[in-house]
Length: 450
Image (cartoon, rainbow, N blue to C red; front, side):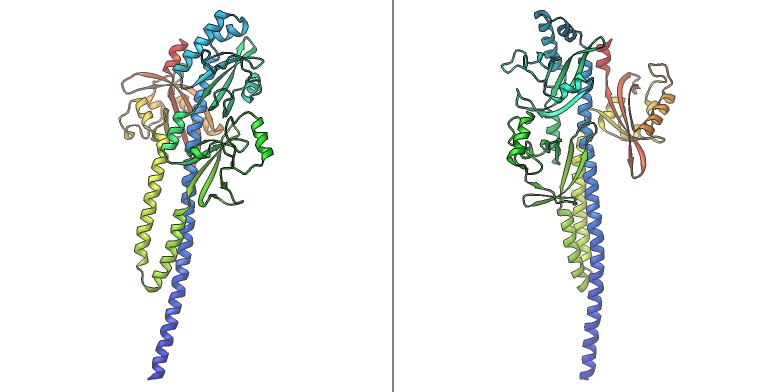
């Protein structure tokens, strides 16, 4: 009897041990898969969030560059550069002041070839830019070289950060001066902070110049010593920023960052044509929760399968949190002043924002879905070419080159023709080519040109 009891106990212990080992092994395997899947999902969400922010800022830059180029053709600026006089100066100052009130820029000014400001939109303000020498700025050198200069820095006179865009002012075949516009990006920054995203824009020197968190602005991404800080101040790009370390630590070879005692995932997105980076951050607690969940699942599997119900609850809670976060980041896309469409090259429109519906006069996304560009355009474009044939040609060029910019007339549902400027960009989503279409109504510009 005692032997049977001892055998039963031994068998029970053996079965229990085997079940415990199997349960813990299964929990470990499932847990590892869950952690990897969650980490992958968070990083993909960061990629989408970062790319949406980069695209939104690129749209701001492109629009400001377009305005600056258009303004550089103003005749009163060429007159002042070639025939300096009190009358021409008054006319140029007045034009700059008028343009500033009509356009989404806070300041614009005209410089001669030496870099001295001849006229400015704030010519009558206490801290007028007139007479200042900005020949040391890179955007001035770029414009003199015939290029569009783009710079994000703190102004020396206003002590405010802004996006500076410069264009050459040509008289005949010669560059006679430089026109500069400044946009303080207040509206963009407000949208960024309202989205509750954790993002920052870092320049080539590692200084944070734009961020959803005000405490990060004017700080360096990495710790710098007194000599480097002095060198940064000598660039005259950072105004009154203290250039202290942001407190963000990046372990090498990892996708994690630590801010003081808080750990984050991060992804970096480069900008094209400018030496900036956008960094997007997300807290790591979803992955940590998944790790704790895996441990709990293993323990509960050893005694019962009740841990399954806990996993379902926690996973649903986590997915809801991520869905809410993704909805907030989509606000940058939906609240844009430009019309955005995602279009399959063959099957037509896949998705769009409200501005796109408003521009073409459709009531809902169902009405525009699966339509190609020529289907809400007049039969022919202003150059006389058939809209369908021209669309096929432009899509083919974009698929090869990656992007393209052109003017295109749309036809609203009410029959109204609208001239637009279109930026067509190829993006690959899950290995499938999709066209990102950004359209801007240029009716006002056309009226000014005519």
